Length: 471
Image (tube, rainbow, N blue to C red; front, side):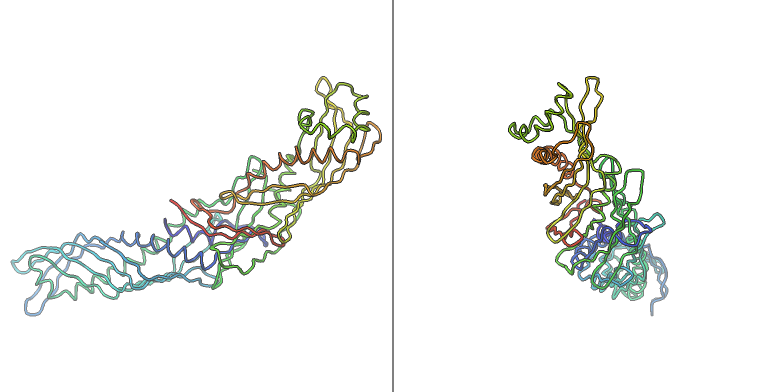
């Protein structure tokens, strides 16, 4: 696990020209603390990869003379980062601080003095190592998130070397010179390594679901509509959160409203999904022409046998006399984009549609019988399935009026009971199968949600969750 997993949360997706988001994400202090834990583990592994160059030189030692020496094969044996912290820098990013770190190194030494040649091993203990760096958060030219290191500083409090074997007594005479050289060498190595560790996050950031496929008809875009808002307590991300027809991005005739997040801090991440996102889905699916359902006789045959004759006799028998022996077909479809609205603990979707009745001729041709105008209201329940948000609806109420008829006038109210059953037992179950599949939330690769809470608030759905990364 590397630092990208948590820092990528602050820069999920690319740029757009919009001003108001459809989705807002907040990363709290608890989320940053989790990031610190996984980040320090990753940085510790990076520090183990430090390659200290071989040293060679000469040093004049009092009362002995000039001594030539070399230190080779320096290998990091252990690294400790006992104290670390991450803090938000308003308007910039994250400041990382490490104090009291230590590094243990082992290597070989070789010396030449007059006619004396000798060699052995040594141990180097680097103590009181401190590192600080600012991780700036932005976007690259393609609109993907990007992080970069800035203002890195490293200081080695002490570097003590102990020589073993051979003429180590001779090395020990000028060990203070070696200590100083090794300390400077370590300080030069650390900041480039930290900066590279930060830059190494960027390839991983390209795996974010900037444009996520929902199904064969739609995809959802989670591009950033503005730079992240970084305060001293949280990071807010403004994401587009808009559905599009695949390969044909057309803006809906409405815009998102401003989203305000409640002051909740118990979870690592809060995701606010506005009514705009849901309504952009309605726009897309209606535009694709798939918000329709064909109902045939074999489907209606599953309805309770005592549900129809008396209520619809005035209509059905009149039709039957004109088209004896023909099968019937009803086409239920939307006439306008469905509109979702959110109130505390309640989500409602209102839809305007039509019900067209056809007689199916022996050659398969359809003869239009009548058209009913249909106004429906459903209550929606939303839930999480993995990294997707799903839903299900139940019928609140509906209203039928006659739009057109080629079989004469009839009492539309007499059809209420049968259409209520058709909606409840045929149309809505089919719809719920699709809604249960859900659509993907903004996420990083290998990201899982834990301890999730979901609330319906005024004008938005709020998901509070902890996160965990695998792999």
